[in-house]
Amino acid sequence: MTQSAHAYAYLRPSAVLDGADGRHLDLATSGGATPLGAAANPRFFAGFLADPAPAAAALLAVADVAAARYHQPQLRASLDPVVTANGDRLRFESFSGCCGVYARLDVLQAGLDGDEIGHGTTNVDVNNPLREALTRIGPADPLHLAVGPDALEVTSFDGPLVEKKVPLPERWLRGFAETQVVAAGFELRAELPAAEAVRFLRSLPRGGRGGVGWVVPAGRSLRPTTRPVPGAICLPGPERLVALQRVLRHALALRVYGPVAAGEPTASAWEAVLPGMRLTLTLSPDASRGFSGEGGVLDALATGTAEQDAELVSVLLAWEPRIEVGDLAEQSGLSPERVRAALTRLGTAGQIGYDTAEAAYFHRQLPYEAGRAEAANPRLRAARALVEAGAVRMEEGGTTAVVTVDDHIQRVRTDEAGRTGCTCLWWGKYRGGRGPCKHVLAVAMVREAGA
Image: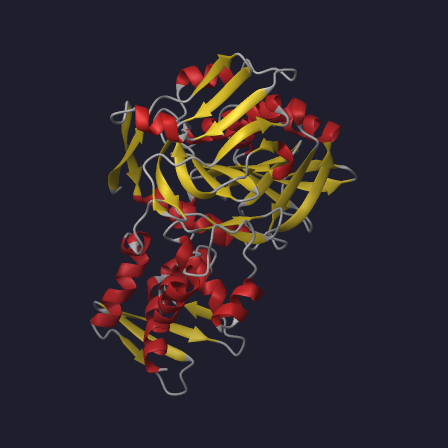
């Protein structure tokens, strides 16, 4: 697995400090993008958390996921969470080291009381002393939150006092790209009130491997089932929801999102509704199956049109908390379908996320080079190699293509509805459930070039 080193440089460790005016949660920032350009230690917010105890618990849950590997748990991860300021909210995001769980805490405007919320994206330091301090935050403790140092603090330091270098697997980057594609296909499937949410979550296994399970809405709760009956929601690796245990006593409701048709194991999102906040865990279709291999971004990456459209759409983004496809289509002059493909492509560079609660994309700016996820994808590289080798031959009528690979051939067929299939083993095993195979991608590239 290819890895690169990701460096964090903090002016000081994040900490909970006692002051004359109460307790302060100071989150140190490292690098990031802002409307004014790159910043070494940006500042996005200073004010009070409206509900300190649930906020502290939810931040710990995001940190739990960042430090966890649910598959092969003996290997630890050490990735600091990302925070994005969208002008009306703060979003804290993390990914598990195994690439199978994505966590996001949305602290909404109702959960914050203070200065204006800025715009931009950065990493925040989460260390063991901070984690211990957050566990001691009580409901009656006023808590001041500062995301980033103020101007005086920046000028008083000669250089970074805290530096970290951590391995950043390429599949972790691809996972960030895939989750926004997967989540865009979700719908709200169930909503449980507080008492039922607590009962259900406490009934789930906390350790070991629970495998892929299913639940069905039953009144105001969820009932387990052994198979994907109509209306069932996939619960893949229920032990991976353990981070939600942090916020159980504060939860107002539990919302579950997933695809409507779920005959096979699928990803799903589990959202704990908190006072002025939402904590969401999105699970990959299996604990041993990371988001990086889902292939949802490949169709957009395979087209040159999406690459050009992404350049146009990117200049219209401004850390908006809600990106409306229709508005972007009107501003850019592109069709909604081309805008969605452009957003998918931008997501591979960490510029786009998806909020299931609001059924809308949002803008962030992760420190990844454009095209890095594309270059790291083996299926995409293989498809480009087939095209360059002249391995694709379109048959008369254009609905069937022959792809010659070494000493054998594969046939790619497209029906009247535009659905594509292939004779290869990959397609036979997954039926498009994990994105297109290299042969289908190669044919799509040739068709676009011909058009």
